[in-house]
Image 1 (cartoon, one colour):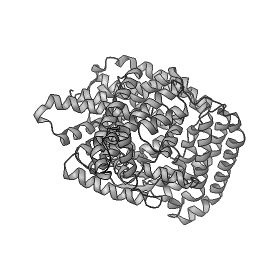
Image 2 (cartoon, helix red, strand yellow; image 1 turned 135 degrees about the vertical axis):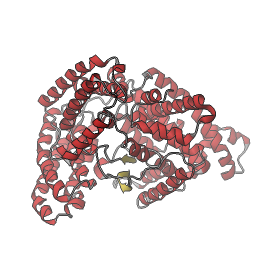
Image 3 (tube, rainbow, N blue to C red; image 1 turned 30 degrees about the vertical axis):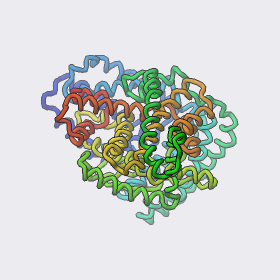
Image 4 (cartoon, rainbow, N blue to C red; image 1 turned 180 degrees about the horizontal axis):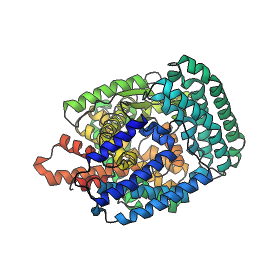
Length: 576
């Protein structure tokens, strides 16, 4: 597998040599060296990307290593200054040099200013749990070859724990509490979750049992340390602050929109979308509540809330949510194909129960095979409610994720959203791996939210699903407002709950979870709103330029043919 990765890179480079110049050669050498360093320094990311040369090692979180990484990033950034005039380069390199520059700037900011390893215990969970899960979840090689790497990673876990205990000082309480929850999931993973791989090689499984128990014990001791030591001094501020948030937002979005413009657009879109969801709700209200008087029908929020409440009566449960999502994936796929909305890939898709150690921040996610992986499948992971939730909270959760909302959610995460787009993205080739490794979250999330609107426009699921699509659009708007208001201001929990429940019609359970997520993360929640805004602006520009020649399916295929770069570069590449 290691040799294949290098051969793939060589073939990609050779296939793009025609028309290249010495400047291209120089840039490609810088990019190759930096990426090689990046993959070696982030072995868990390398595994997820499909480069399995580093499957046996874990990230080094020591201050010395972080210092070396910072020095290297600054050195490479200096070398890239000679390409400030990117038009010296040809083809894909013109875009990729700017993507690489921005991502190196982001790494410098994270290492020099953000310094999460010193205050965010969730940083270490990538090594303590996900590093093992990615070796088990994907059948990229035989069990006999993967299990020794699994053993070596488990051997390295006590070292990561020691580094975490040395580095972490005064984390925010919410981050620490979430880390404790997720570490219990990691313990369960080590004790029971490795069996799908280990059962394929019974003798190796037997040999691995002692290290499994040793690793589980180390994680249990770490959990006790988190609870008994770190939690007592978890008095850090979860608010990032205006200066750091502005910088992080710039890197996270790779957008020309300023922080102030985003807030202004979000507030305007909130009002417009509230009007749109009322217009959709009104005929449904008359259908479900035929005796309502004119005064009731004129109350926009009351009408919208009543219809959403009625639709929420049809919902899955813990034991049916995954199978229902599987059913909806098939229906959405048939709908996309029947209308030629976008080319459907052949990449396998599995709908799975979200692993326990990944729960706590979202209901679902799409885990696409990495761009360097061969014969990889995509996982659409859906989370049942946590076991310790009481019935009222479980009921609230499934009113939020009712049958119609699961339809919209499936569009976002799977078809034609993340699964489809990322499958196409993995087919993009360029002289370097820059665009494959440093993908734009704003493009990716924006495409998925755009697909929700496009499918609703095409009539998918009727007005009932359109209600959920508009509700999800309201949620994306609220996400952007929350993101800024929490991390650059002093938005309280009550103010956040009012925005989510009263202005964007979210259930209490969803709002509670989002309040937690907004404190745990920063800048990521803005990618949905900024992404959909940029994608809709892009489509409008294409419709205006191409006029009667605009064909939705061909447009969509072209948009996702460039990998996953920031939307502004797609616009440039399409001549819009």
